[in-house]
Image (cartoon, rainbow, N blue to C red; front, top):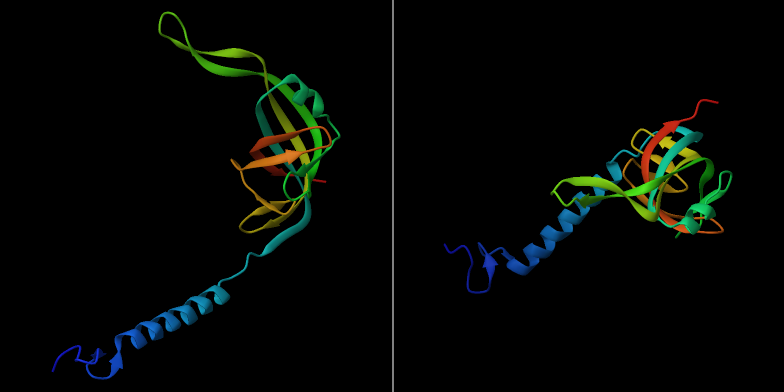
Length: 164
């Protein structure tokens, strides 16, 4: 007995195309069942105050002046409130430069700055993620943020829950 007969049926029972469609259908049902049965994250704290440490690097003086303590930051694309700036520190931007004797040193770049911000924000804290302004917020995540004066890319350096 042939595995595939002259009509294209496997063992004379089912057509190859029908079998393929049936397998895809079964896989879709199994995948959907798996997705529905997956557990959702448990909300640990909703409306919890957090302090988010942000770094904005390689910016000019007008950007530094456009970011003020007490200002509200928003997500650039979504327009949702990210948080309120409670602390701002400005440092000179440094870049690796090779000296004449071949050493690499970190040198200040004239007219460029790094801004370290501490932002107080409302967050939803689950067992899997911290959500600030509707976005999953993790250390290393980069956000595009704005206020009424500037729009910048900021990198999350730290998140800590604020004790009231």
